Amino acid sequence: MSYSESYSAAGMNMMGITLIVSMKGDLDESDMLQIQKDILGSIQHNSAKEVIIDVSYISMLDLPLFKILRETAQMVSVLGSGVVFVGFKAGIASALVDLDADFGDIRTAVTMDDGFELLKCKDTVNMPEG
Image (cartoon, rainbow, N blue to C red; front, side):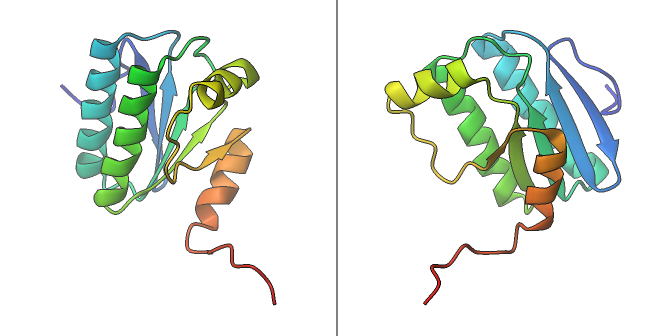
């Protein structure tokens, strides 16, 4: 299977050094684990240095599925690539906070442009002034 194909649960495309993953609709655990595997394989195959995961088409996300997303971000980081999630809907963000979801060091942005900007600043550490 070629990593440039579109998958049923996620579309993946390379743009320069950035792998863009677009989640397609609501997913189950099997879909999410396959996307995780595809992302990691694509990073290795394409030498992606950055990953943007667009979740804007997801309207429902429970804690087990969010945990897979968080673990995917950790795995991407272990491979040496930066990762940003873009497009979390307000209702999903609110529900995850209400459920005390562990966001760890997940980076998020509202739009793709914001995601690219955040990746450009990945080496910047927000330090208190003074």
